[in-house]
Structures are given as structure tokens and as C-alpha cells.
Length: 307
Image 1 (cartoon, rainbow, N blue to C red):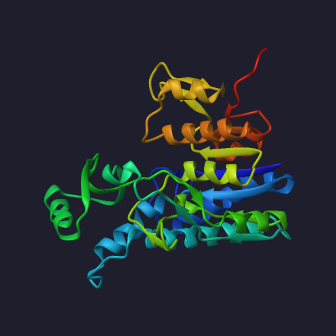
Image 2: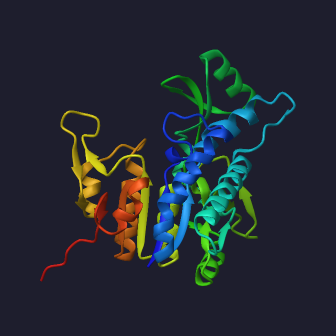
């Protein structure tokens, strides 16, 4: 079975941890341990989240006094793809002796006319006081918004059209290689209509939606979305909280999960199932093997056809 695994950014680092390099290794080992049993039985593509993209590198780029023009966000994304990809490739190599593992820096095509470019909503980088944030916005042309801890830069999150290196990933899979790619949703690029030339854009593509698009193009059998909770919950965090163990795409959408947490994951699962008639599931990293075998998580399945 061919499985695309979307690994939540809260695993690297986990929720509440700083995105420092020293924090990463125990979490990499945890990921490798959780995924090794699946990799022994199935073809695997891993698309990691990059919590560090919205943390340490963006902070460094904005704060370095030697940089008159901070590194563009799409290049920071390429940098963190390489860093996380290297860590995961070495961790999986050690957990799977003899298995070929490749980590790719990949690019995700987005539409230049995507409405998201006029509605930046995704937070990146550190929090600032109101005065500092407004000064940076004037100086660097940033959009800013209020966050829980202060003021932060916000950027667009356009919808992924396709991962440009999908053909390369397909060839590697056919050769028995476990592939790590599309980290953080991939480096977002737009294509010139006349020349086909690619240009990086200041945006962040949702990792789960990119994974769904990649899984569809790779003709995967299963999309596995891993996070830091056991399954999807109705009324999460309230006394009325209830697990959702089985749902169709339509049922998930009717529940209206929030954009800032479970919304993109449920939408990614719904899109993949609708477009491929395959299966998707959402659950905890440490239960990855159990989820694929139907013993944990939230299963997202096609509508039953009666007649």
C-alpha cells in the first residue's frame, strides 16, 4: 500500500517546545520509531510540518542586523525543508537499516490570483509590541495582526495546485525509496503564463493540503495525517467533547472545524477521499501503525453508495 504521511508541526518541536536544534533530535527519534513499522510493510512518503518556519528562522531573518534585506520567506522555507529533511532522513536511515531514504526540497505551485494573497492570515515569526510591529510593517511592507502574545507578521496561505517534483517522488517510490518531501507545504512558487518561469512568493502553503494534493497525484491508497491528539473531536476542549471515530467528507465539513487547528486537517482528508475514493485518517503520531490498521484515530471514508 502507498501511504502519504502528513506529520504535524507540533511533533518537530512538540507543542510548547522551543524550535531549537537541541530539542529536535529526541523528537526525530520518536518520529522514526513510530513510522518504522509502517515503512517495513508499505511505500511511504513523509511530508513534515515545519513549526520552525514560523519560529526560529523567521526570527533570525528579521532580527539579524547584518541583513539590510532579510531573507525572503520562501527561501526560509527551503532552508527549513532542508534542515528537517536531513534530520528525518538520518533518523529513518538508522531506524530502517538497509532501506533507502531520500529527502527532497520541493516546490509547490500556487496561483498568482489566489484570493488568499489579498487576505494574509498565517502568522510567521516572533511576537512584537504594537509600536515595534507597526514600525517593522512600515519599514518592510509587512502585514501585521494581533496574536495572543502581541503583534506578529501575517502572510497569505494560498491553496496548493501541485508539487512540481511529484514525478521525481514517483520514480523514487518505484525504486523502493522512502521519500521525505514537501516540508511545511513546500516552497511556494508562481508560474509565468508565457515563459513558465518560476518565482518564489511570500506565503506559506498549508502542509496538510499539500500532502492531500501530492497523495492524489501519486495515486496513494491512504493519506495519514498525524498530530498530537488521538483523533478528531467534536467540541474539542469543552465539557461536551466527543471523539469522532468515523466520518465521510460531507460529515466532517458540516462540523465546521476551526481554521487555526483541525480545519485544514479535516479538509485535506476530505479532499483526498472525495477525489480518489481512497481512505484517510487523522490521529496521534505514536499510534501511526494502529491508525492504518483501523485501531485508532478518525477514519475518513467515501460515502456509502446504496442502490
